[in-house]
Amino acid sequence: MANSRSFFTALFDFSFSEFITPRVVGVLYGIAIFFVGLGALSFIAASFRGGFLPGIFTLLVAPLASLLYIILIRVGLEGLMVAFRTAANTGRTADNTESLRNP
Image (tube, rainbow, N blue to C red; front, top):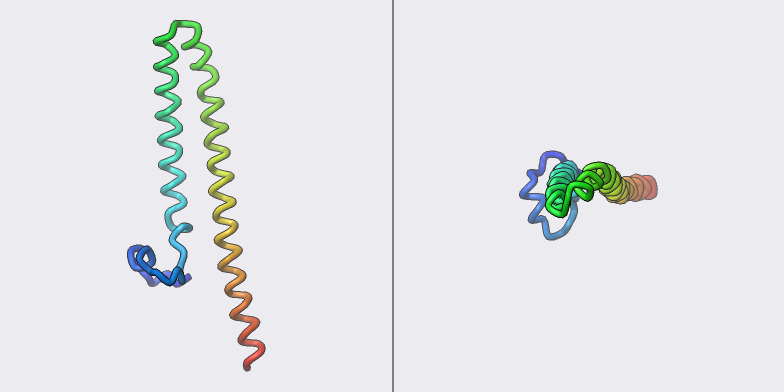
């Protein structure tokens, strides 16, 4: 992956010779955390409208559920990164093997 290419050049590269996912995965993780937090706050507020006890229960459970969601999102994104790094390393290995065949 050449670092000299700009993000938008790589974005509109129709040959898909360079991956942009490794560049944006951190941003996606941040957005996911934001929406999980927003969802938890909305769920807590809606539960308090249903009564005091449901609100207290949700106040205790929502952070745990949010943490679980964030962990699952993180594991999924890490799996995606592993796949992209495997593809990049496999490409490098193929290039190195080809150069050994044709000195």
